Length: 162
Length: 162
DNA sequence: CAGTTATGGTTGAACTCTCAAATATCAACC
DNA sequence: GGTTGATATTTGAGAGTTCAACCATAACTG
Image (cartoon, rainbow over all chains, first blue to last red; front, side, top):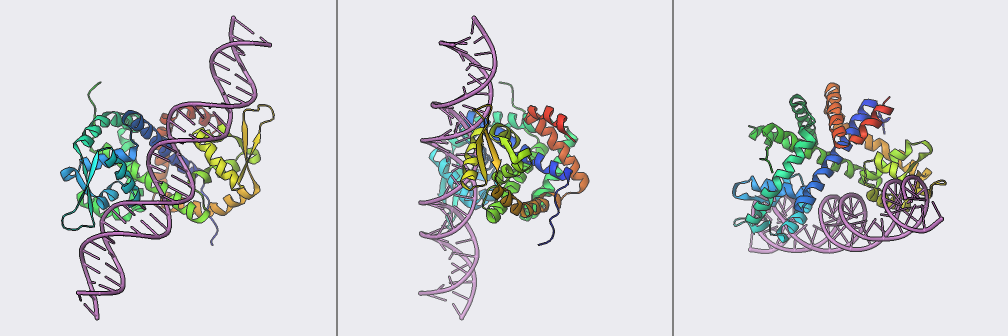
């Protein structure tokens, strides 16, 4: 046990600002999506990531990695999305362990209907307050943090960054 | 209904980086505190904010504002903290509607025991990856977002900023 | 001062998330 | 080719959060 190095004032302020900002932003997005589309933000992201994938399909494991969710959380979420008829599960033909989640046509329509309101909310809360320069700096800082939080990201990001 | 203005690539990347970063950081903190001190991060914050207040006490409404929590969430949380013996509730003598939450001695000890590990985790995940300059930029950006998310903050911040 | 409105706080039900344990399939090995 | 270990996913129970509804008290108004 070495002596604790406490946060100085600026660190404290930065940390709390990050905390409250991420909380308020997430809550704002959750509220908007829940109100307008009846789903939490995490579920929207699942639909969105599926819609961007070839065949609108992904392995549960791949999907979990993309949305940064635990396998368990994703499984529960896909249960709900499947009940709603927005996603369906299939078994992989070669490897019967893996299941494939596919966005249904109905799911795609729901996503398409939800997207404009969601994007507007993101724009209003995240991009309108910031200058372009500030946004780009912000992105770099977040990327730095992200790589440190999840080192597995570094390789893939370098690979497919456009 | 006006035409939706979608996010361009840089905005998309910024938004997702923010999303994953805040998710991973919050999860890392939650895991560390749950493992080492048996409480989620939101509860730690409640204890921490009480400990910084005069008399280690705050009105439920004030406490809710400080930790950016809904009244309902705070009430449920204080129920748990009270069961654990870390916080106790009192009635306000003048206004019998308001209840006052006070950090107990035991609660203070638990907080003191949890703090070093928590601070170390924050430092490791947030400050070690960033330069000082980057941190200060980050703080300004977050403050901008915060004021936009919760305009009520602007006045108080200006008032008691040291 | 009675009636209305606003404020402070709590509760219960529904839902999501977490963690640990369980299931099923594939891969390797001797 | 039957164990052993790794991989892919699911399940169930417990805990936290949300939302709407509710109770109590204070403040205002005619």
